[in-house]
Image 1 (cartoon, rainbow, N blue to C red):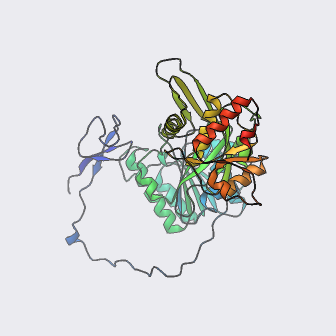
Image 2 (tube, one colour; image 1 turned 30 degrees about the vertical axis):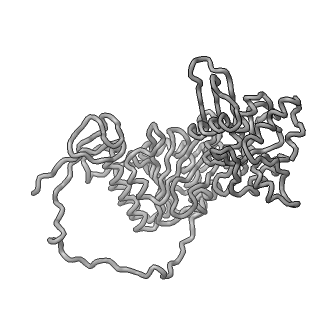
Image 3 (tube, rainbow, N blue to C red; image 1 turned 90 degrees about the horizontal axis):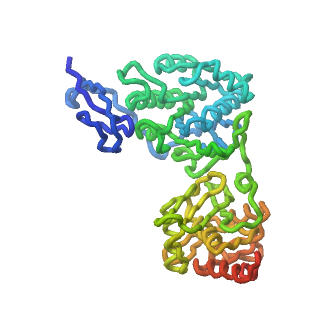
Length: 467
């Protein structure tokens, strides 16, 4: 019998090393290399027995579409692309206590109530604990099959005999297989268990949803190969200081990857938020310096959020740049353009930027709203309270148009806004049937001049903000 060799696998990133080291060369983490046995029973290609091979089909052949499984949670169905796909594997990650188990338990209850054969397997809690949560969420009367198990073998044997439609595994880090000698939660165990469960989903046509822990950097723990195995990767985000949670798709083979679902955490579980803009703007004052309402897009849904900025004298020698909810590199670029093209100096001044409500914005269309909020704070003059702002800023100081301006304007009009501060290209496309009047901004200098004119007149709505 060949003598097994040993390899050392990083528990943080999954990279393989030939010998032990205190620090992983790939990710730089310390004390993460764990020894794993590797068998040398591989048969050379020229000695393998001839098998039956595989069958090939034409690319243009007809394939019957399988109907999706609706969870009856519209926000979850939106993110998954219209519902769960039979035979798919989904990975749901998020911070501890953010509500992953709550969301999936509510989804299993609604699926089971609709006649879909649903199984919930918990490796972190006992059946009694899950039952108590189900009673609090109001889904204890639904026909969900519940089990508490961490060994992969009995789980697969039980599922094979039951032929489920949807299976929830909470969580993948707690599972282990006796085929490996590694401890549960290690890279080898997570990879092997995820591979077996994904194979089970493809073979039986069941939809398998895996719950994954996240690291301190916010990434799903375990090797990245797990994210490549599954069909969709969903992240459940949110700040515990706020009541809402955001479900975002980072990978989806059966739908878009830029959709979000918004939920509100309550005592009775997670409730859907059909109009996130109203939630994010709740409690907003009518007029305050350093605040601008950004008309953004999250997937196909327009979302309005308030961007807050504060420019204050620096208490120490080096000014601070603090950002919450936006890219700090993007803020540095906007400040550089304001200084170089508009003559607004931030030397000796701290700049703080915050997206209200804890939402994270990724699109460049927020550039103009950020610049407007910073200029409003720097000159201590509020922007028009009835206006929304959107537009992308180039390094030359030009303000460029962004996609789907009409959808942004319609959402703003629905919430009672009467004008929009937008790129001049949007103004040129305006016709008699335009949703909102446009305050055209061609360059960033135009925006600064309007803010300065407001400061000179001392009026909240001077003629400088005429559309």
